[in-house]
Length: 183
Image (spheres, rainbow, N blue to C red):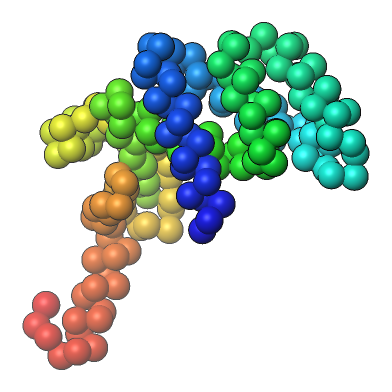
């Protein structure tokens, strides 16, 4: 829990810098790039964060990575600050929080749409439009299929879950029958 609070604080700080200099989207892309690189290259991530190696040599490796990625001055300084404070291991969480905060700043909400079978692009657009109207934000949908739903769709946007699946309706009906309620 404490680690998430720390990650949130660093993400907010980077976002404030991005708002001040108008580079929020550039920092978003750079942060995603560095995080993806360290996720893909586990050995590199372990080398940078492993205290068995000297701090100077780990910092030199991080500086070389920053240089090869041609990151902005602010992102370079941010990563070196994370390293100096012993927080480079929180980069994944910082990236997640930054993405959410940058989306909020931009007026974007991310949602997931799960259906039992493939949906037409028109249907997906109708759901996206309805969610946009509901939230007052531009909605980006992540669409997936789950044959276990039997039919219908389940949509999640933030903490809100709209479950219109036949599986859930059948489950609710069964529970009502168990309680002796009329269906």
